[in-house]
Image (cartoon, rainbow, N blue to C red):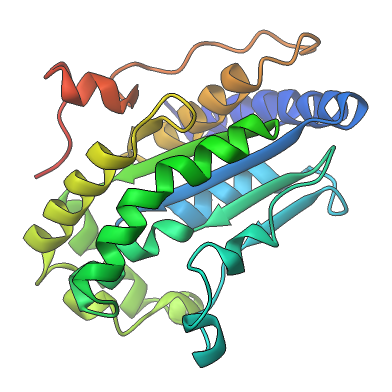
Amino acid sequence: MTDDEYEAELARLQVALVDAQIWAQAEGKKICIVFEGRDSAGKDGAIKRITEHLSVRQTRIIALPKPSDREKSQWWFQRYAEHLPAAGEWVIFNRSWYNRAGVEKVMGFSTPQEQEIFLRDVTPFETMLDDAGIILIKLWLDISKKEQKARLDDRRADPLKRLKVSPLDAVAQEKWDAYSAARDEMLRRSHHAGGPWTCVKTDKKKDARLNTIRHILHILGCPAYSLDVPAPDADIVFGYDKVIAGERELFK
């Protein structure tokens, strides 16, 4: 795909996103999209393209800092629940309550008991969201170790990307296997009917962005898209049930 072809298809899909938001406002839909994945997997870039032309009043991007001492004493889901969408709103979490089963587990920021309680409680929590009429879309952005290294190196070398540099970048490659193990347990134990996981292969950024948007549009099912929305490429975007069945693989 050339750059011009990519930009043309992105523009088409962004028109469909606008259609979907107009419909969601009219119908009072509550939309919550969770972006998870390894460092440099493309969460920021995908979110930017999704929200670029959406209403700033009806769209919120939630990227919470590390919890304060007071928040650490709260029910784990409490600081996230206050950001959930009301009717007509889209809320996009750039990392979410799944921090407890990912970075906190690998880096030891919470105890094994706290991590186990989270994995026990997350399915009932998300089932309550589903019962409340919230459309929950959970995305795991998967990246290969080689491509992650290239992106982290580029991030450190580019002055315009300094704000993306994190102390955790230094251990992303070092603890690759630990992150893989945490990912596999998290996805396996939190994939359920009310909150299924969708995996996105992101080594090719542009293909990943386009197919992520296509997936979201198909899940929303707006009946009035002004343009045809192709189905996502099944080799790039696939349900975690395909991984369970051995039909697709995540990066090891």
